[in-house]
Length: 80
Ligand code: FES
Image: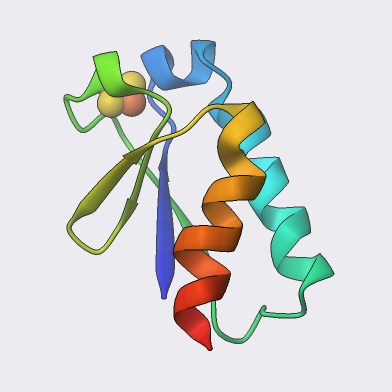
C-alpha cells in the first residue's frame, strides 16, 4: 500500500508536514514498514480539501489531528 501526501503549498499551510511526520512515526510504531510506503506529490488541484492524502484512487482530507485515526481505520484495518 502506498500513501501519497500532497506537498503543495496550500496543503503545506494546513500542516501536510505534520501529517507526513505523523504517518512516518505511526508506520514505525506499528512495524509496517514493509507493507506501507509513503510518497509525496505536487498539488493535485484539491487544495480546499487539504491536507490531501490518497491511497490508490481514494482521496482523504486529513489534518494533523485526524492522522492517527486515519491510519488506524484506513491503513492498519485494511492490512490485516
Ligand atoms: S496544495 Fe495540496 S491539493 Fe493543492
